[in-house]
Image (cartoon, rainbow, N blue to C red):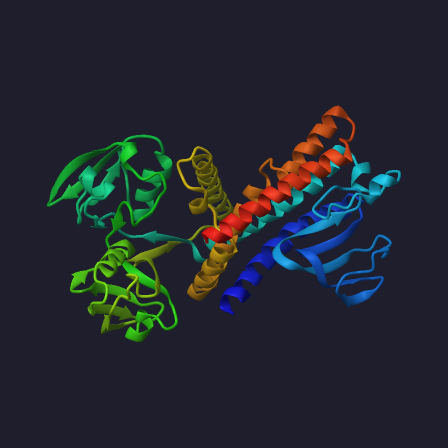
Length: 447
């Protein structure tokens, strides 16, 4: 039920914010909004000024007389606002049989159509900005107070480059680093595409390590490259009736050692578990402030039934910002995330990253929503902001059935100063919708 509830909350907020943008813009531009729907497909329940609150579908000859029917529909994978005189997700083209009315979308000037079609994306962007601002202003940015490498996985890219556990990173490409956030930014963002010269301190002596960009993973993943000192594997969730559950492992536990081997990463932990199927492994965990000795036996599939990730257990401080500076810092974060998102999309299109690994659907959204909510309200809001920003970026892409696709058609109509044939727009909309549904099925399968 946790998955269902948090998924409903997450999607409900994002869809409402997005569709409210379209709805409010349409109303401000003098357009009728016949339907405001959360979800797609069959109407489950809703309210309007004419018939009041009702369950099920409205009569086929129902006339809202310009009033909006606010409804909840069967498939909770999005939503839509049905604006009079517009070809949209409802595929209703009855309006084409009549002369254009002044309250219809098709009767309005191009700039108003563009305002309405981009308002949803702008609302999602605004939500992300406000959450980032609030996080920077009220809590501040987490600063990991170390530049020392805690663990280098044998035979990993970092190992082949020459990094060793205990190395203290002093500078990257001549720029001093003061915390792990500096290290990550200089490796994966600020110097993206460039080779690196990393100055380190090892055994009291400075050393320069030359790093070819081709040796650095194209996607930042702490378990595949450098891990800061203080990183430990942390348990995010424990499955019912699993070996972990029987061993007494709980969500929030920090793994210190397994089979008498000190642990530094989730991947290292997974390797040990998979290589000891059916064997009882001594386990040391930290639970809150207590150190516990447990034992766990991996099942025949080489798993113990936990969700595991890397957590920093060292010193973290929070750098706060002024009211206006918080907006500036938040906007810089949004620019970086947007750049990384388009970089990821580019790698998917060029075949460098598998589609199923780059996108997450309802299953993973529900999973991440639960995990972030269990961590705390700040974590959940940050997850919500990231998802809202992703929704804005995806929606503005020039693809049929997305806001970006509508934007392209509106722009073409504005340039040629006439409306494209309704049948053509319906065909484009149908094709885009079918492709999106197929992608959604594939993503759910991958999840």
